[in-house]
Length: 131
Image 1 (cartoon, rainbow, N blue to C red):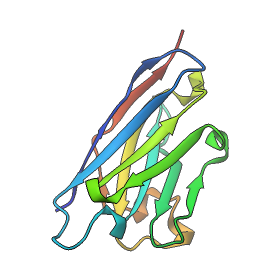
Image 2: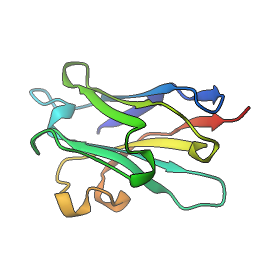
Image 3: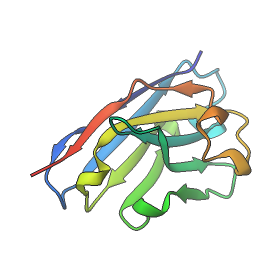
């Protein structure tokens, strides 16, 4: 059973930066997180969970972003460490949310932005952007 643990959240002023990490454990021997599509989602109080970014290592390393974070957030991986990252720059108050990491072994491109496509989820890390 794959387990995901997020870290790196916190309180930051508008315009500031944070880097979230998501580390996977329980991956079968001979495989790494590179065998999975991995996504970041976020959920603000009173809002539904929404897609932030996702990457399929096998998909030509293509990364997908929601429009509101393009140019500010960057998804990266270290497959050897079974860890993915979300570098968040120029943070805005509307970025405040709990951020979740999700992984799935059979996520197809047309569903990469859909939470139900992912098999494993972390517990989330709080990001608060406020002055």
